[in-house]
Structures are given as C-alpha cells and as structure tokens.
Length: 446
Picture (cartoon, helix red, strand yellow):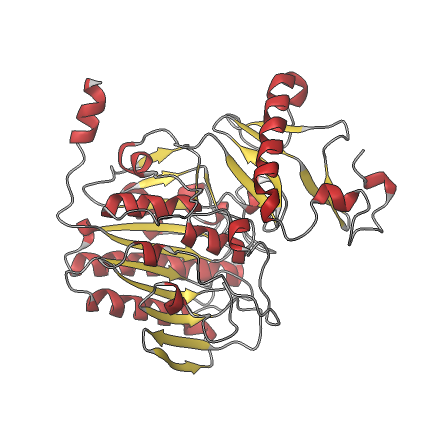
C-alpha cells in the first residue's frame, strides 16, 4: 500500500484541466515507425516523443478498417453499437447517429474542440459534419483519398464556411496549419483536438521538400517522414505557447496498413479478420511532468479507452445513460499500471473474430481464397500465447483448458452483442444463410 501511495504522489497535480491532442494517422502500420521497431523509415521526432513519454506496445484500434475504428475512438463504444461496422463509401447515405455522444460532447462545456483532417463517419444530409457531434470546428475531408468526388470542407458552429479541391501534396501541411491556428486561438481555455491526418492512406502524395526523402520506402515512406516532421512542429508549437506541460499528446493510427506499409511482423493487414496486423497499431503518449519519460508498457488497451480516460483526467462525467465499453487507462499512462480490461473484442464487421486477454489471444476466423472462413469446429483452434511474439503457431494443443475458456468468452460476447446485429452472423451465413449460398461445402462450419 505504501508503494502505491508513493506512486500516486509522484504524479504532479495539473495546473489546470489538460488539453488533449490526438494525432490520428490513416492506415499507418505497427512497423512503420522506429519506436515500434520499424527500421525502413527515419522518424526522429517520434523517436523523441517516445523517449519523452510512454509507448504502448499492445494498443488495439477499435476495428481493422476506417469507419468503425473512428466511431469507436470518438464514442468509447464498440462500433457495432453505433451501427457503423463497415467502411462508408461515396454512395452511402448513412451517418453516425447524432444521438451518439463523442469525446467532444463529453468534455463540454469546459473544452473547445476541433476535428481537423479526415472524418469518414458519414457525408450525407444536413447533419453529417463533426460540428453536429460536439465539435466547434471542422476542416477536412469527408472520407479517404481514394474515394471521389472529394472536397475539403470547413465548418464552424454556424454552419458550412466553404469547400475546396484538395491540394494533395500540401494537404497534411494544410491540416497542421489549421491545427496550429485552432490551438493558438484557445488562449488559456482547455481544448480537445483530433488532428486526423489522411496519410499514409493510398494513394500517397509526397509533399514539397519530402519527395524522395525515404530512400527505402518510396512515396509511402515520404509521407511517413512528413507525418514525423508534423509531430515535431506541433510539439515545438506547444512549447512556444507555454502549454507543453498542460497538454497530453497522443499519436496513433485508425488501423493497420493496407497494400503498403509494415505490420512489424504482425500477421494479416487492414481488414484481415482477427489477427493483429489489422488492429495493433502504434501508440505513443506524451505529457511532460505527468507521464514518465522513456517508458514502455504491454498493457492491453484500445481506442475505445480514450473517451473515459479524457473524462477522468479532465474531471468530466461520463455521458449518462450511455453504455461505454472503454475503460479509464490513466493509471496505465501515468503510472505504468496494469490494464483495466479483462478482455478486448476484435470485430470483423458485426462478427467477433478475435478475443485478447493480457496473456492470450484466440482467433476464430480468417480469409481464405475468396471467402470469409470460420475456424470453429474444423479441428485446428487458433490460440496464441501473447507473452511470445507472433501469431504463427497455435498453442491450442498445449492448453485445451484455455481454449475452452476463450471459446466460452467469445460465445458470451457474441450473445451480448447479437441484439445489435443488422445482418446474420457469420456462422448462420456459412451454414447457407442469406447472402452466402455459394460457399463450398468444404468451407462450411462443421
């Protein structure tokens, strides 16, 4: 008890409610930056950020593709609760329900808020913009680089202020400039900023001054180096304004890499069922004087944890009457504490395809040839000991008791979320349900 008390006392009391900045990259892989073990692309500013803060090695995005992951981060809820379990494309008319409470809304009225960069939670009708979800300001894209037609939009609380054709090579720099302007305008008022950079999502556009900068990783590497430079400039701005020690800065990604980028040896990629390469992404947090320098933690956490953590650190109540799946991870960040999670669920659309505890990982689905393939009942359960690197060799034969326990956990979770489904489960589909009548018998669940 005495040591715990000393640990708490060692954390300085903030001078005021902290600012929160989340630099949210698009499709950045676990192995794309040096603090996570990457070697192909120089990232000196992120290296310094990691030395000055904490790196979470077992951080999971809320989903393995964009739209649901972003919904999960902003609401603190598994994306199936928001109705956004798949990527929204240009023809989609759905938006995130305006009844969903975002971080921006939870921190009001004390906090100013802005989302600058990529939104991708709906783009149709009069209420799609982030300013209808608690943000005071929005400047950015409705969705990804590879979806058209594409415009840069600007909104404040009074409504739209304009739209422009994107200048792709300068787009990330424009986002950063708008972010700096927003920060400067807040004065002493605490703020929440999501700087949702739209790179390194393909196609890549090398910014002026970064063309060919990455000799080993092409245009993708150029964009990662540009992102790294933006991190350095943003930290410099916080110091110049004298709010460096008042600001928690988080760097992460919405999901793993797509056709390019490095998973750092993790199995599968963006959209790749229950394996880590699509979900496990970089996470670095920096808050001088509060987060100890040069710390690494393997505590399992997820993007859904940011909402309750920001509320706890700011003294804001959690949204009443809302089921929040995330947990307050301030003890992990500030004191190197253990995870507050008994388990994390990994979804592919509305299907639970993976379950992670601190020690174990169970995967029940993958993609094979042209099909989403359930692994249950096929005689080769996929259990991984996460105290060892990689998901190459299942240890199910060595731990049948753990397999049964993990299968029971997954069944309980599937039953809990079943009422929220809008489509048949994968098991129902592969038994010949609607939409999967051409699945070969070989691949049907036995």
